[in-house]
Length: 377
Image (cartoon, rainbow, N blue to C red; front, side):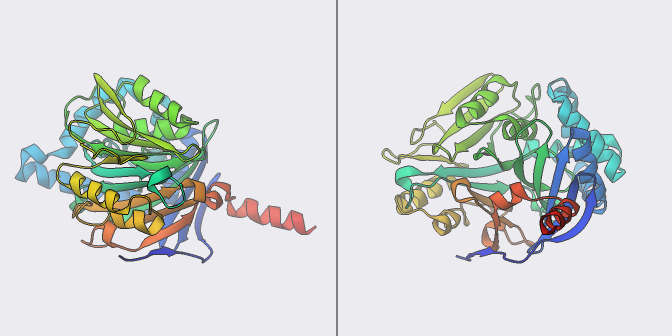
């Protein structure tokens, strides 16, 4: 496999806005936002205005072409309907952040709202292994995001380090102009990933990516994460992996608006059979790919470390449409992220290794300069 790449170079600051700043690390964009919901959205919008405008224009252009060629694939029309149905359930802080993002990026608010609903259509894989499954007992939480590569999300990949006022700081593996989450971890070492199922049209709940965001901001523990997903009105059909590296432990969730099933480690779901004896694991993937994911985990059982966990996510467990792959090891303070390059799936591209503790403790460039000057006096 291609080895994960650790970047030792200093981040290059590209811009500062309010309490937020944008930097580049190993060629990747990293956005730091902080403050009230509106402030975080505005920082995001100002600092990434060109990229947000380009991506939204691309999504609308592709959406218009899809509607002409195949009405059943008219994603934008579907997400507009979804937004109206979901609106009563969307938290006020998300609505405020979207408004700030639209103002900062100088994009119509309706377009920002519509494109932020597209993650409702994502499909993915994920796993967590720990304890007896790993070489040193450390928890590794892997995440594969498979979605239409032709939309070009991977060209606007973004790592967001968010410090929301009064809530947990979190890291979101995402995209320019998107405030929800499909892959993330927080400062309590609680990590989240999801896999899409069916249930399209069951929109009367909080959108999946905003539910994930709620978990990142509010969950102190695995137990709290599970409770948030249980007690919040949900949409469609999704399967989630929630892990807590402090314990370490993880759970799988099988969710529809009217169903909530907790999958204990090593146990099975009718759509996700797991061999007996694969303890300290939670595995989720689509039909066909799940069998290979399970086989790879069994083959490496008891020997998992970072490189072995990254290898599990390679094709064909990841689909050809894999636009990002991520691996969390919160106990070690590490995060690996790969994004698709051209038509090459992310799982086959080099990974960038991030120091999670350093990201959470990073100070805005101006504040850092002032702190250094004060220490020298």
